[in-house]
Image 1: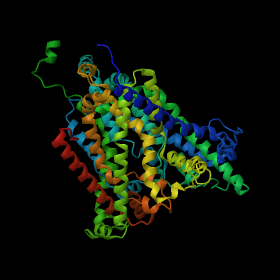
Image 2 (image 1 turned 120 degrees about the vertical axis):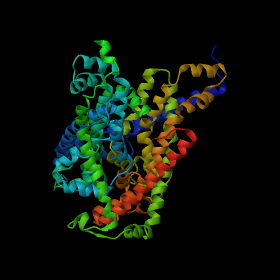
Image 3 (image 1 turned 180 degrees about the vertical axis):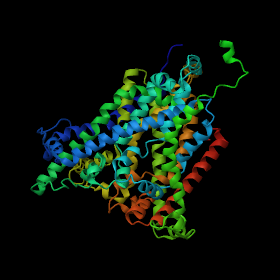
Image 4 (image 1 turned 120 degrees about the horizontal axis):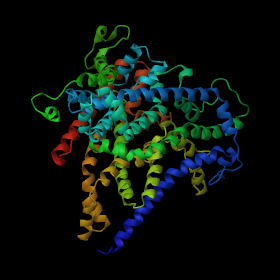
Length: 294
Length: 307
């Protein structure tokens, strides 16, 4: 049957086009603006001269950022928390998800309930705070690495993925060959599940990289602060030179401050935005199967 | 050999049970320590809790702190702010990912679609701190790009971040910016599962694009929509602490103080543990109730349910 375009179909296509353009523009432009502003003379940014291209290019902002001890320390701390925290999260989440995906595991249902219940009911901020304090991990690196390492939502996505993608015939075959559970998980399930492993990995990395609540509540030592807390101090509380790094002239400070703000947004966000397109191709396969079924 | 394995004489081998238990163990312990043990701490909401005496040693006061909260002068403002923000958020943000998913689903060119989707997901991975900071930079009354535009159009500069009347809208707008693309993914998945023959059948019957949306795509999305709505209903009262706290300042407090930020201030800044825990329990019970109620309604009318 030949395709006929009616007026209302044209209108529909126009709507699709408009929505796509609006989406692209509204996402890309603010980010692009931050990039060009971070390279431009702050005076030009303040007076609205910077729209499409950087004006009077300068690297002063970035220079100041890389000279700032607090930012560098925050950066290093965040890298440590992200690497250790994500590994920990994966180690805890994936085996549990696999166990709960096995139909021959007798505790499948009660354990699932045990986990899911915590998605809807919690002790609340203060009781949790008390427990963390009692364990002696508050104000240490451990709290940033361990706390919330296990995420029930991620576990359920992974579980559904395993259920759908690890055929039970494979397990039977492996059994006959005398392959044990652990070896089956590591040698067969993991390589088969690249998509979901990548997705869970990305979720863990992003969560740890962007973590600010845990640090706000549990960390007081300035030397342990992750990047996000440093960012908050600098970006929102204008606490640029906290540890006695002086500067001269109020105007210079304000201008330099703007420049540093734009630059630090780039420096802190870039690692995540660079990482994610590589893992992006797995979203479809990974999340979908998990989320739609789960 | 092969016959013997499938023969029903023996029960299926359970030799995997112990390793599988060990697989679960770390997660079980972690959840027990950080999620279940604190639930025991809920008791402190009913006590005059003194840290040195512990939960067993502190004096029991029953519902005193719950009553104090309900009768406190902040109660109505907190309640209205919290519900106002989260209902506004829900009404404004819920339909958008659905529309976006339907839009993406119409893009026939895979590479174009992949590109737009990748771009639209990106803000989801940016931290709240950065998003709020970008907002405050763009909206700055002296140097922000938005006020430069307002000024150019002949208007007066507005200090949006300090204006109570703007707080909720800014919260919602930044949420839309950050999460619409990502949230569309799950609907997009449901749409890509639609059998292409359904579209063909619809167009043979003379259904144009709009009617295909109504009669093919929306019904396919319905179960997902219901489940996500139920989950959203459960979190109505727990509207995000992180962003609210970051966007809060002395000037917009009348509109931005919500229960979550109040719990934090009462509990960890002025150390009224019992009072803060009581407010926490109060909200927890309400959200659990809402979740169960909405889930019940959904079960009755649509058949979709969380449990």
